[in-house]
Length: 380
Length: 139
Image (tube, rainbow over all chains, first blue to last red; front, top):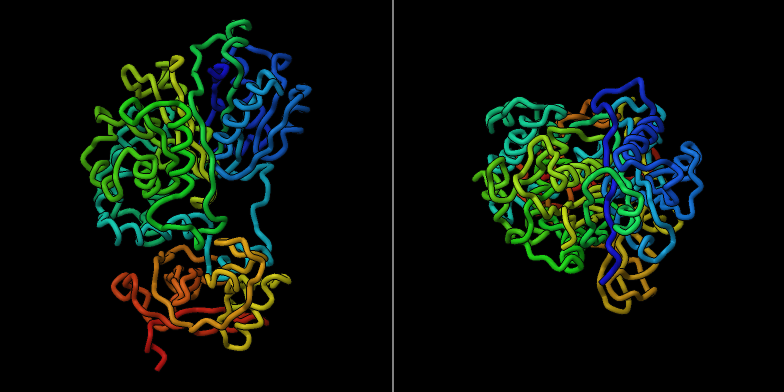
């Protein structure tokens, strides 16, 4: 059996939302300090650093001398990739305790990297000339094809936002908490047909961080919180630009990364108590539930509309309120992992009773990269 | 001029044949000499079989509407266009590309998936962009 690897510390930035008084680096470092405190560790316990951007900067700012660095930056899924890579590195003996941190001034853009792509890039030549304006005009394009192929209705698409708001309503840290109806979704501004504003994620500032180490080391160090085991992981990719996505009704990355994670964990779908699926837009959880194998093609819209993913439902999904209602800094994956850890520790705002196994699906870019984590509150 | 604010693509050595084609009123894509499959965007080797023997061919210009959004929050340069369709079309040769739909009022009712389209070219700066209109719209 492989050495057990755990998430021993997990915390978000003190504040989420509109934070023009905090830079990207401050959000990264503040989250890192919170996660170390959560684990009961100091910077001298850390010998590996992962982030999107410069792990050199993070290590240097905190006074960590790294033996292992990972700057994988493949979009909002990157932090799931970091957990997977850290798990492998710890098992290989490359390092023993890894800090993974995220901070993003997604709304206020303070000290934020420029995202513009050149006119000679693949995106700049073959997508930007057609008037795309970020994810709302690209991530959304596959949805009408999915609707035609499966019969998903506009009402069912809106129900995704309605269901997630029910969870956000139970979460004091969620940005949007008032319950909404399908009519409210339809009455919100049309952003990019068929997507209304309430079917698009928030844009916020915030951060989060994790401490990953071996179970043995966590126990030896005497970390403070219940350990969350990394049972299985997977990663893959589809196309770098949305127009070249292999199948507009299914994410290849979602399918492959999830199959790998479930196989490594040795679990079946019936074992799963709780699911987090990256929800930049309302259609993404629909693809996720099907591509992860919980449901067959075309079933997820009705499943969500019938309340099965809502509070009290049999497959609790996006229980923090998700990117649609909780927070979305631009690279949301960190927050999906944070909520899974809270659920498995039994400390979530909207706690799923007895949650022991959680699966987290991260998306990067526009269905471009994907990673999946199977996490457990005990060693499976 | 508003139109001049719209993004203008800048060719690279690997994409120059595509843009030379649009300037000549032709939609060119690559075809693998080994397995006969077409591919788009331009690349050095066939993503299906791995062969490096790719040749440029002129596509028929016929396509179908694969999927789209109607964008209500215009990108810079598109402010005067009204809601516009950012579409992905499937060429008769089997490859897909992003484009705009023109030659028809942009409403969900007018844009049915799988409807037949034909390529037209729009001059922008020194470049020519492949756009698509419903078959017969320009006749």
